Length: 520
Image (tube, rainbow, N blue to C red; front, side, top):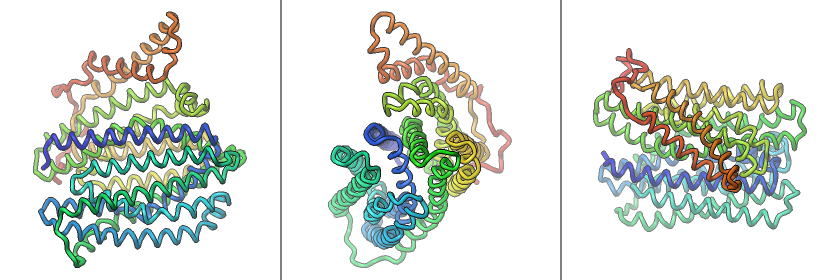
């Protein structure tokens, strides 16, 4: 089992990387919205949703397969198998990537004309098809670096790719005709495909230098090939089902908006505001939680496999759930309070602020669901998580057909609410059933909620006082306001004792569970 220091180190590295990537993503969305408009963002989001299905077909499960083969060989000291395992992974990726790329390229007229019902997307889909083999290979190399505990190299390439993509895109937007929606989208996807190719070549070079540490083998291993396929194929099938449903949803949303009475540009603009503006802001703070969830998967897996007591494992789960609730409640209050300012400051769009305010309460369910999924995977229940996600995607498609044509964009928001809440209930409920972990509801919900309410009042009062004494610029600075809110919230949590562990007052959420133990 790895040391706590190693987990903390990896957790910090993942947190920093995710924060930078999320920040860069929000910055990119903001610049794109300001430069090209909401309708371009809507069309671009549609294109990328279809492209996401192709990426899943080419690369689903590859990262996990390469990681498992590498980490198992590395941990067992079979270093000669690492090179052979990655070679088998790369061979699979090239075959799958090229096959899907050809299908996607020649199928672009059908996908663009008949599925998306917008011929402007055909050239974009063809340009993206070229990147599919590179994405598949990149996933294998990322799996290798994670498997041999060289996460830093993988993180470096991810950051480089993002910054190259954003830099190239911003330059391209200055030279293309921004009044031509097809030209703007084509420029965006070409920059995207180019950055994916660059990322693949960079990973390959780093791999060549790193793999020299391990013994060279000249023959292929059928055992490793079979092992890789046995890991990759089930994940690929389930991922394809979910991705297909998600893609169908994203295709149906603009169609439903048009059926509700909106013209094509208005439908794409509304879709772009919710999916391309509001959701990235809501998901931005989850970077911290995602890093914690990633580390928790490995931590719980190690504890269960080493035979640690159920009580010890439940304490870890309880702390994780409590922190997710406290964090989610605070983020909800802050995002809701600053929603209008965020919409104007980040996107120059008042409607984005309106939807941020409406959707802010979703943050609690999103974050709790995310940490619950991570813990279930750590308890070897990833198949259940995938089934729930597939159910969620199927339900989203159903709501896209029923609600959106009748209620327009607010039907879309309602479907997000219903699906996210049901997903959270299913994941969190199963986590409760399997572990019966104790949690202090007063510390985890009541005190954070009161602290969040007082935080908003204190932030508003601070802004009012700064205005009165002539520091208007400071009071209107959103970064300063968010920092002040975070400080207020943290201090109130400390003052009320919400962050303290009170085992005597902990309430077992499923105290009657005995057969559903973690050892089962």
